[in-house]
Length: 443
Image (cartoon, rainbow, N blue to C red):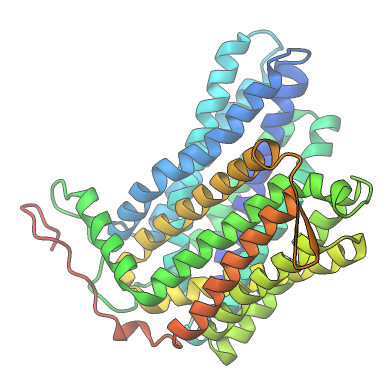
């Protein structure tokens, strides 16, 4: 069950951290909207800024976090990240226990914003370190299963965290939810501390501390050259961008697509989202196992092509039952692709670049999702507003045209992946890219 003892502890630590993250975000948003700024007209603007803070902190900190993680001892970095988040969330919880009105609303909002930024930043160190440690403690032939379990834990936490936090805030109060969130990081710390971690994999050891002030930017550029110079890594990045863009467009338009194109009640939107989440969990579990048996590259190619085809089918759907079936299949394709993408990165990148690899993939995918979300909303509300076209006997409107375009682009990329990406060889076949010479180079 869950591969081995060390991975079980890592999985438990990840699950608790993620539940704490999602619960913290939910509790803070409810606190701001129902107590701190109750009845204020600008409350929605403040909550939007808090949500943007998470994305901005992730994108800004991830490159530095990945580079530093490649230098530092990974398990120790994870432990310190958990202690740091416990301290930050604990401080916010302590502020929540103060009598109402004892802290000015502006000062309280500033503290909350700083806490959200700090916890989001610390999460980048945790995620990059965990990625490397998993690749070390799990045998290579089981990497697909391991990363499928981590993807499933992430999807479950995204459901469980808000689902638990919201009713608790309304019944027990935000202070107790925040205290629970803080304690979740301590329990995660205890689970991870029991992991026996020894560095393994190709490339030079990276656990020693660097001498002097080594150039973070030079090290990051070295990994960027490796990423864009490797056919498989480059293909995984392109797929991650397109999948993120596709899901971003869906997130922006689906709430309008349901009544406008599917001719169904808007209440079906939540059902479609739930079906998509269930499919993502199932796809991650199935994709990881299938990748270990049939090859991660083959599953990657098939999932990418399937996602594009499904997006095209979804764009042409006019019945809610068809959309429901496609939503489940959407999740299956996305979950499978996410599960096998991580083993492909581990196979193709030297171990001393893995932290920086993750520091590129995560923010780039998030940027693509945000860009697609914004662009889709703008196009649907301005340029394509009122658009009606006809081609080859088919009718096209503003929303299905956007989704169809994304599906066609993804299918073309999937076809390229079928031809251009051969099954990946082992990581040992990949020569590490030496960093550029500098005065204070690490040994």
